[in-house]
Image (cartoon, rainbow, N blue to C red; front, side, top):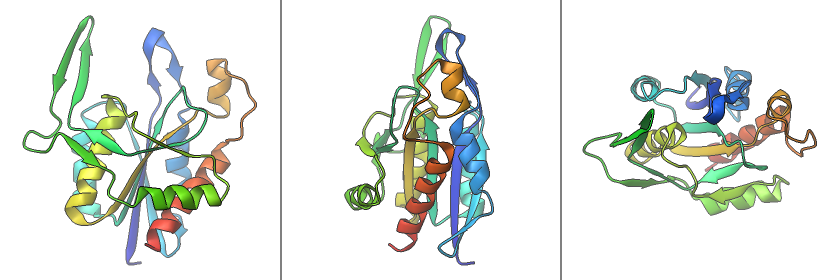
Length: 204
């Protein structure tokens, strides 16, 4: 198999006001796609802990596995539809009680890195397939941003195709968060969305 894809999600985590985000749909999708073949491309699904130490582990995985396609998934509790993130910042935000510290992710790298694909082409393809997705520039400065920066940086350096998606809460997580159950999205449909993105990128 000449084509290799990497799909990552995040484990559960504790947010503000001790809200527990579990199960994390990004984790479920990464696990469901692990070892699946899509358009002659074999997928490796991995789950990251919500911790900046995972960035070093992620770099090692990228350098060893050398995927041609990378899809990062992160939960956005306040979105109703998936967001294709267009850029990431070389910065991480760490909070200790009331103190906030900012540090660069990669000391000698550029401040901003953009998505290394034709995002308008992908967006139009997905909309024509009936997916209600949107373009976005709302990564923030937490771990989703750090992972997206790592992927987009890798994409430009090695000629790989990389996309980071913020996805909405679905299923059991919506119940835990007290959100309305009605939704056009489900784990099954989000899996199909990622499969279609990989298929699109394989053919590009």
